[in-house]
Image (cartoon, rainbow, N blue to C red; front, top):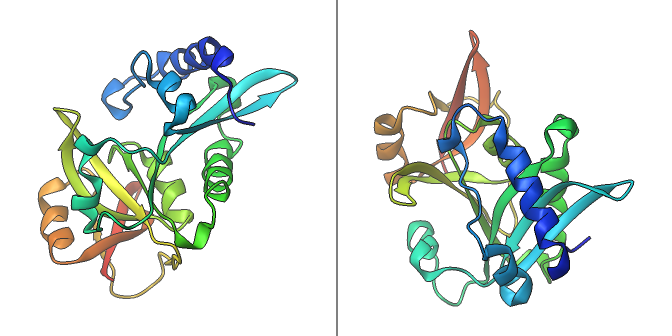
Length: 211
């Protein structure tokens, strides 16, 4: 259900709880003070998931985009293209592993009307494997890797209106370590996209192909 303005304190408390036990805080960028109020006031919607009245997860959908993000430029999209951002998701540590991230991806996408006209993107740290793994499974592709938010390396993941899922078994994929930015950038600049994930000898790799 959409979060109301009077529930923002509960939202911020869940965000603090979700990030409090993380070892690498560079993997996530918590929303700054006032952000949720601005979303609820008209920039989008914050969708929450409750269990017996307790807020256990939320995800933000932005349709009023920040021009300083330069997402259209990174994605090669014109100003006339309907573009929305799947902003951060936070899940209560007690409820991780219950597919809440993917469910919130699906539910937020269903709020866009009509969904088949919207282009959608999100950002994720290459080291935040759980996040971009879920997005690849929902039809997103790694379209860019850049330094954002002044110092943090982030993937930009893009979902076209009619995505095509790619299996890790597809032949011809170029497999790279997600932390290997120098190897990924030339592929992305040539038009390749990160479309699949696999674990090879215990090491996670992302598969690129021309699209």
